[in-house]
Image (cartoon, rainbow, N blue to C red; front, side, top):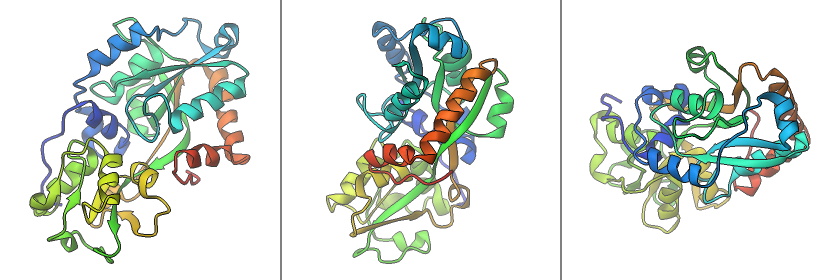
Length: 303
């Protein structure tokens, strides 16, 4: 890849690129166009966490407030998704009710950790007891000493799904020449493909999709030969369909291994951290984690 386009804008781009963790500098340079609107809606819905921190506060209130990204299928979409089910399972493991705090991604990951974990938003909501889908990334940890990031539960990466009849092999991106490809333009997958090989594939890319789920649905309808997005997005649509196969983007080495995401709490909430870590470990051991992901049509694998 010899050129990279300008960083995308938009709330979905912020959410998608946030998941990229160490994959790119996108963690630190995004814009969330709907941030203020989402914050106002959250306040109107009463999404305000109690002040008492740690496990004692959770037990005293009888609720675990969990921050999850809104509009991030298959992890959260219209009140449902993998992270919603995981949040419910965490609350159940602690013997309390769940209070879900869905929020729109801020400008960068540091903003989200400040607003959702250790300080709270200036509009008056937060922080939550725990935040989900946080990149388990050493530079991010070093930049945010107010929080502890732990318990990785999923590893995501940019993938490309293809119709085997139209694209039986894909060893290099050059094999995409002449084939229509669906890609969410304002996401990590989008700018990787748009800028690949000096922009060689721009003319065959349709970039109007908001996320990999929409791109995969267009592929499934037979409108495209291939679709790019996050593994979780693509698999939630075409997983198990023998007409399609998913592989990492060829020649894009920094996306092949992906990035892990986990939980984040305040640094002094050590008892809550220990309880949540035990809950995650228990869900892995008894296969509930696999079941939660399976409900979202995603195959869970050990991180």
